Length: 187
Length: 111
Image (cartoon, rainbow over all chains, first blue to last red; front, side, top):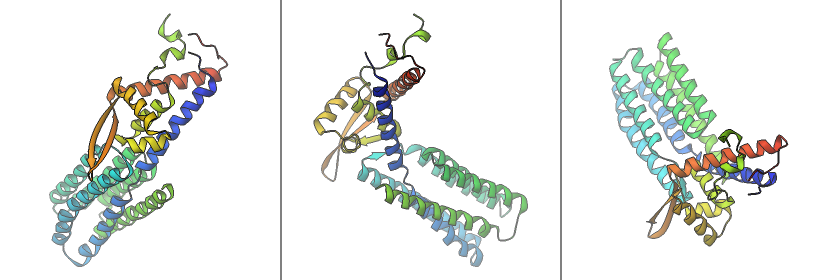
């Protein structure tokens, strides 16, 4: 077999281009980012002017519905573009976030664990999503939320729910809008 | 000859070492599965050409073909097998070694 240097290089370049294009097509995650960001922001007035029961009910109903909507969005998108990732790691991470948030929220009994715990699970979950998507922005956001969870656990500030959900909601919303813009540009 | 001294071309896989077939495996190394249409457009090949190459990969056990229907229209999905993924990574590693070797000034082919 005679293989020219240019042939080997051309093959490697073609392979990298095909991989990069597929990665770019698959990196669209604006729908869940915007959806969960919006849910977090909507829940803030409930905590400030309503009750903790209202906030808990909001998330217990809203989070599973949002996960189902996200799964349907990914499925419909895969059918439309003709390429998809393995959904199971994403689904497992989403379920771990919901279970972790619910468990720490209830086990904390209104104490620091009940507000820092859910944010910790959200932050770690976004870190995993960032790793799965190979998104530095997503992983950085997850790391930032994990740090915020540790800080609020240590400082126990007033209006802790608002202090944690506003940066999470706004950050997720902005990252989602940025991703949507990128996706539109790619298409 | 010890394995460490073999020329990198000996590590190239004859089945995979082809632009379209390598392209199919490259895409499937990033995705869980891709439709025939996506592969055809991404690799800029004709239906017949892609069919022939995918058939070669399937025969070698490197990809699996799933046929189904979406909105009453036939759709063919292709996904890489575990063997396909490992063969692809071995091929990329061999190609990278080759390019590195050429850069080092050795352009002889020992095969």
